[in-house]
Image (cartoon, rainbow, N blue to C red; front, side):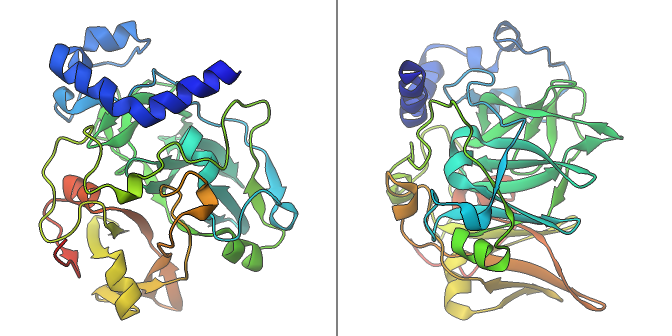
Length: 341
């Protein structure tokens, strides 16, 4: 068990060295035959992206294991989360759940069900991207796992039913049977555990998996927040006028995408992105990617995104990610409130 933990920790910290060696020594990272040997039955003849933009992140297929049978504890019984630690807050069909990033940083995907809705709660540490999906396509419920691969430094997921590869940040099918399809995103937000517990004291909180070698509460990417650029996994262009590692709020309203610097929201209060579409500050939370201990990271803040509709306000899908990620996937979307790095 201890050996497996050390292996996972070393892969998480030094995966960029593996990437560098692959880049220098072999094109195998973009070779379907290599991927088949790694255990994939994906139809590589169908793809919407250049296969050469997909790189190994170090771990093999399912080397970062998804959580497929999640357990939960009531929020007011949790004693292993610090008040400021970030959780993904999901409220659906009258049920509120929280998924701590100190767990997701080690697993990246939780396949769950809330009421009648099967969901996948996902987190990509290298992009600080938290996205929740309805995991149904044409009525079929998909179960997602990690490929161990990255594109634009972002997690590439796969479904176990067709082994299609999916981009976590966008929900797009990019390789295989469901190429060109798009998973439905479900509004959620990252907030401090204390804020969730205050609002939902009996709310369900994802429990730490038992009999796991992973060091929950420890950040395997310590110091990532302090970098001036992403790990060398990322090979794209960096955005102008903003530190590539600065937090940016990406908001989606159907096919429309907006972006605003998180610091701009902190400084200016509610920010209007378009008619009826606003982002507002929602309190502080700790960065899970800063210090070795997940509850000791610097304060980075939380936001809410919503749209004014008849009868009130509806939450919008949004994500607080790094500027380089927002630029990589949405290069034509201007980032509101950018400042020189």
